Every structure is written in structure tokens, then in C-alpha cells.
Length: 405
Image 1 (cartoon, rainbow, N blue to C red):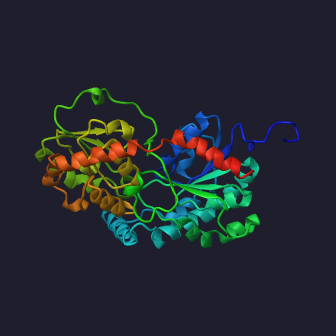
Image 2 (spheres, rainbow, N blue to C red):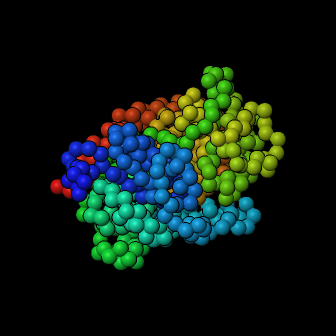
């Protein structure tokens, strides 16, 4: 009981408080939203600690949010996009290929970058935790600040995955980057005593050692948006969705899709070009008659009824297509996209090639591949067997309450 006579939030009944410490970037935030919603719907309290564009995105998802980085701090870590689009694309591709060399493990390039992000956001994350007093910290896979907050308060930490990658020792690799944050918090440099890991795919689909992990169904969240009338009509020909996420169009522009779109008239299909509302399509010139450009439409509403999806290999798009059972043609550009492309191909979910090598035959072959279509549907059915975010709520609450026992 507290000084007012009310039961503590750590009591064996009643709500618990869960702090979500999330790396900046909607590719890190969006996969955590369904679990945050599930906790709120069950009567628990949720606060999101994040930075940059994710602050507004979390608020738009209906979640209470605190900003954990000074203005410009995150952009300074990732650097400005400089040089012509072709040069930016080349650098991004080279970096992505280097990252893929590490396989299921997080490459030192990514670890260094997100170690800096974790360090920059750690002080505000720990401060928010000390003020709000959560019973549990859920942190996105590459956000070490959540580890510091959980350790400082002596509460459990839960790592929330967002892809097919698994690395049981990943949390420990963040500690050297958090030494100053731990010292500032007056906390010994060590992992939280109680930890758990959530994987968002069936165990047999995960890359690398699985370790002790909880499996949870990947439930796509792509923000809200209006649905166009044509989406309700059955397609007269196979419908192919083209999307490049949010980062690629912003860093490289859309010129890299010129070859793909030039091949569209030679494919017996109708294409939906979904690049969001901010992408400048002018470099693409006049689009072929079988290509329909759309603004922001939630991806999980575009995928049903789609015969194939052409995309960049971002984790969110890869996982959403897997969950929807849609065959994938991946044109990786950088980051972890080469890893995702290779994993999707190895699982029989589709194929991949460099953006400069795609042609009409590549797309037509995928559309005619009944084996891949069946494999994609089977993978989606297997995903649907996993516990939902709502199913994990009781387990998370029990973990939080056990820490106070």
C-alpha cells in the first residue's frame, strides 16, 4: 500500500506500468504498437520513450510519449544525405552488403550507430523511468537505453524483435556503449537481472540461435489512412504492389524504380505504386498505363488480394508480406535489407535481385511460380498459429509482478 492507502501498481492484481523504450524511426516503432495497444486494452498503463520522428508517430498511434533526445541529436548520428541520388544509393548499398556479412548477428556498423543512439537517449529514458516508475521495460531490439532504465529501477526488461534475426547475446554487446549512462544513473554496468526476448516469427523461421525467447505473431501496424474505393473491387488482372518504405525514397529519391516501372507494360498485371504522400514522382516521368500511384495507404490493407509485392527489403514490409502470405520480389538497397532478402528467398517466400537487374521476366516468373505462392501462404498460416500480442499480456504482467515479489 502507498501512503494514501492505495494498492501499489506492483500488486498481484490491478494494472502494471510498462515503459516502451524505442529507437527512433518508424521501422522500430511500428512493430511495437500492437503490443502496446494490447496492454492498454487490458487495462495496463503504457508510456513510450522515443525520439525524432517516432515521437509524433507514437502520439498518432494513441500512445502517451516522451521525447528522449535533443532536437537534431539523432540526425547528427545518422548524418545528412549528401551527394547525387546515385551516389547516395551506391554508398547505402555498399553499407548494406557489409552489414549482411555478419549474417544473423548485428554488424559492428549497426551496433556502433545504434550504440550512439542508445547513449544519446539513455539519460532522458532513465529520467522518465524514475519519474513514472514502470514495473516493466519493453525495448526495441536495437535500443540499449531500455536496458539502462530497467537496470536503474531494478525491473525486468523485454527485448521486442522486429525481424527474422535472432542474437541471444545482443543486449550484452550494447553495454560498452552505455557505460557513461549507467555511471550517470549510479547503476553498475550490467544487464537487468530479469530479461525476456520476444520473437515475431515462428522459431523455425528465425535466423541464428534462438535462445530462450517468447514467440509472438507479427501483427502489422502501418498507421492509419483512407482506403480508396478501387481497393474493394476484385482485380481484373494480377495486382502487384510496389513499395519502398519511407527511408529509401527520402534518402535516394525514386529514380531507382525507373527500370522496374519501364518493365511494367510487358507484365500481364496491374501495378500499385505506394510510395507515400511525400515522395516526388517527377523523376519517373509519365507512368505506364498499368501503374497506379497512390499516397499513404496502410500496407496491411494493400497486401490482401495482391499477387506479389515488390519492395526494398525493410523488416516491416518483409514481415507484413510474410504475415499476409504474399510472394515477395525484394530489391535491397541497404541497412538490413540484404539479410531480409536472403532470408525470404531461403524460406521460399520469394526472390531477390539488385534494383538494376530487375526486368519484366523477373516479375512474370514470380507471378507464375505456384510453388512460391503456396510456400508464402503456408508461412502465413504458420504465423497465424502464434500467440497474439493480446495473448502475451498476462505473461508480461506476471513478469512485472514477479519482480516485486
